[in-house]
Length: 291
Length: 276
Image 1 (cartoon, rainbow over the protein chains, first blue to last red):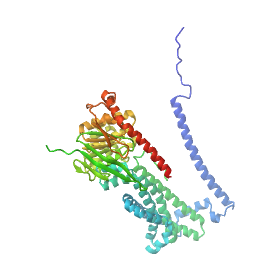
Image 2 (image 1 turned 60 degrees about the vertical axis):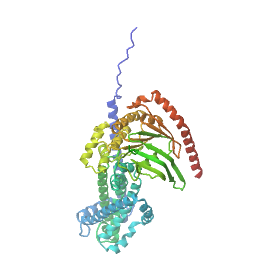
Image 3 (image 1 turned 90 degrees about the vertical axis):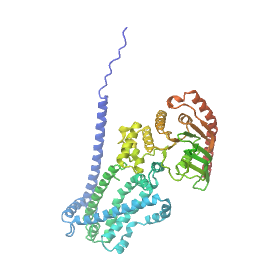
């Protein structure tokens, strides 16, 4: 009788592309808030429980202190310092030791890693020594360094250095050995000299390995500095912690630990920024939000 | 008339390897090959028969265990600057932009950056990628990356071009497009080419001469001249009568070797399993 006329297609409400996208976006946002909420909630509950149990005497606040007491001590520490010496001075000393140790250790580690990684013979010869030395828990070298260098900053720098050196070295060495053979051959045939191959193929391809180690090794540098300050106790955050132990002042200890924690977090964040800049060529950041 | 030496000559070459457990493996033996200047030679053979080894002997990245390798009449000692190499794997530098990848050769060879970049832009234009100069390799498709690799190789104006299954990772359509691209670039530069592949049609479509190699240890089984006229249209050539006839003829030679190669691969896998 008449042609079948197809009814015009009307999207049922809520099924147009824009609406679907909007819903997905809203869902994504909600998810982010839920994650954030739980992160804050867990912190609040943990701190609250700590405070509550300390107040009620369920845990001994002499040993475990309490968040409120730590907050008070932290404020004093930031404003007045310890025994008339500013916190910033101690922090400066610790950071100076860590940074010098870190920079020297990284440069040394990268240099040695590349040199041994590039030269198979040297690599094979030294591998056993490196492994052995690596097995020494390096902080126990602090007393020896104190004797060798004297009770000064250089003994502490040396501990930081040795902490950083081996980690960076091991990664740089591995990174160099894992460099793609075809890529190296390509560079050679395109006309690269040995040095050019190292600089423009080996180093960049080892960079992700090296960076992964730099992330950890900065906190290692700080560990080295602080532990050696326990031994060579004249200044620094380690000295403050040691002092607090002598005074049975756990709140002060925790406050000092908090300071170190913040410093390490800032350092990690800076490192991630640098890394992102250097690794623009990568498909995706390989360290989501730091190590 | 003083005879000009061939671009490449392998004379009775053998190459042996020692495996880590001390067994000696022969990759190629009694290998003879001569490539004239401007000639396009394809090597076909079963997978893993030692085709790539021949290329490494020409570059000097590997030394023959016996026999001699010559490039432009001189014994191979180190990498000849006149050699270009296109790899099977992605050998672009992922941390360099497309432009810097193409400019790498001239820069390694001491040309100042500005000049190298200008030259690289010119080559990118020839492979149709001038708008991608700021991209990084991971942002390009497989075919585009191969184009960059070709530009990176051709910018050095090689007189000898070695290609190790360069297009084997590409899909069929892209591969044909790359064949056209390669023949186009080559017709301008007329380097002597050694093209290693296990794809017989690819070999015939591109080459002047097809070498069929035996299953490893590889040696030359037969040599087939390809007389199809140039310029060739790779997309259509495989329907050509002569192409089909030649392809059948060469396949008859190749078939046994492929079978043999496969049988050996199975046997050695079983042997390895028995060792474990």
